Image (cartoon, rainbow, N blue to C red; front, top):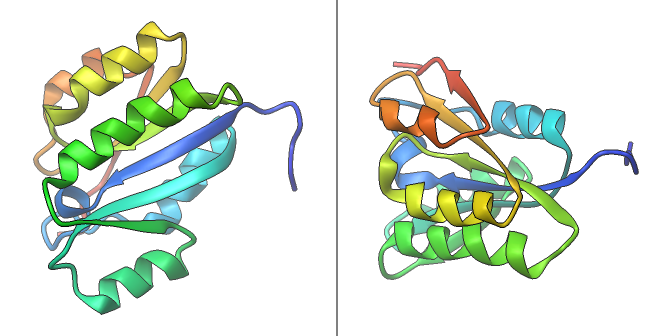
Length: 144
């Protein structure tokens, strides 16, 4: 049910870093956690052009929009992390699903704009520096 008192949020998933054999992050769990922070109005998973069609279909089936890039996935995702919350005043927070520090500059810009940043990461291979930039850090157990 749509809750008018909750903030709108956007979820951005680093596909190559999070949807892999050593982490196997469950996208349904990511969305469930995201809903705790607000109404999910954007839910994107960033993948490279080599992503198998079955993976793309699985992303869609989980209610996420696959963003397929021919270049660096991190660049496309970082641009969107900054662009959507600054372009859309209704988005009050972002959920960044990653385990590395590539997105710290984008996270800093979003926080400077007064938006909340929640980071969901994996227990396996997570950069400890992420905790210093998130308003809240959720660590999911990797399904190794």
